[in-house]
Length: 113
Image 1 (cartoon, rainbow, N blue to C red):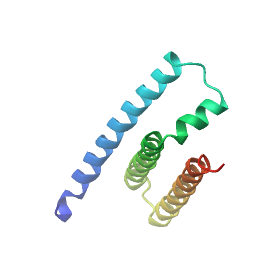
Image 2 (image 1 turned 30 degrees about the horizontal axis):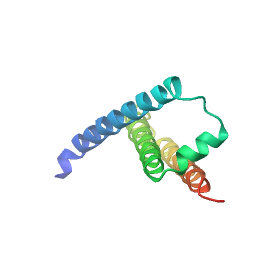
Image 3 (image 1 turned 90 degrees about the horizontal axis):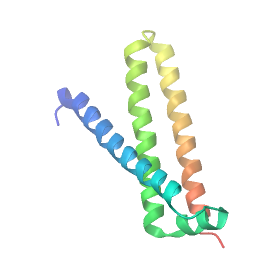
């Protein structure tokens, strides 16, 4: 894509991440509502399944990417002061990165005996 199409790429990726988030959420809520009762051992067993862990990791990646694109666009559109906008963008990026690391560590911790 050319430089002029950067907004189109962000728009498309925002829509694709939203579709994945919606589908995953519907399936997760359906599993919670219509599946067997869930306790800690059941969650651990579920997240210990490799393909579920991959889908969950993709969910978190899509969630943090979706949040970044949305918040970035709002800040770029509605915060006119460059220094404040830069500070807020860095703060949001650091927060989302910390949350991504925390969620990755949480998913990895399931594999510990």
